[in-house]
Amino acid sequence: ESAEVGMDFDKFDQIFDHLIIIDKKTDQIVGTYRICVLKNLKQSYTALEFDLRDLIDSDEIYLELGRACIRKDYRKGSIVLLLWRGIAEYLNSCRASALIGCSSIKVHTTRNAALIYKYLEEQNFIAEELSSFPKSSFIMRDFDIWYMYFGKSLTYYQSEEAKSLIPPLLNSYFKLGAKVICEPAYDRDFNCIDFLTVLKKEDLSNFLARKFRIE
Image (tube, helix red, strand yellow):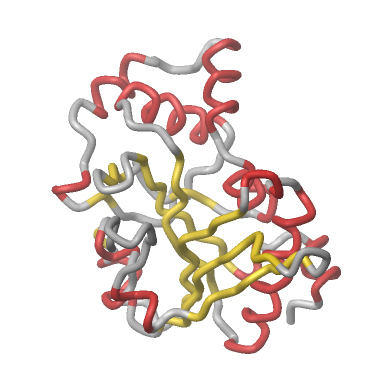
């Protein structure tokens, strides 16, 4: 990555495909998504932050999603839907059985990270059948303490606060059936938290399957 040229790039850009949305009226790029077919999760960007040993032993083919970017004045449902249309077509062509990736939230305090995780747990967005955890350099200090602080359930105002912190793109994942696997990792380079998110092909909503003909 390089701040000197005002661009964000890394070694994965050379091996990933780049899904691009262009506004035909202005001929400007308004949305991008980085995607890659993976037969070995050890080579994934996600594996930099999370211990994926329980998933690596699987014979499944994964489609890794990452580095989604939508121009601020285009952040509405139609653009997110177009991104999913491209992903759905890609999913058809590569025959991947699941989508995986880091879902970022612009949160940097352990308190807010634990609050969001607790909210996701109460909304049944945590996959209990899968196991993973952040690698040591990405663990948030005192996360367990803050998680215990919120007790058995969040108050109405805490739930509303947590809901307000979740970006539209991650909400769209949940609507399609995605699950978070474990507590978030803290990405110090981008000063945000990342949730390890998995969406199995069979769990995609009937709406998306019909609309984009996912087979």
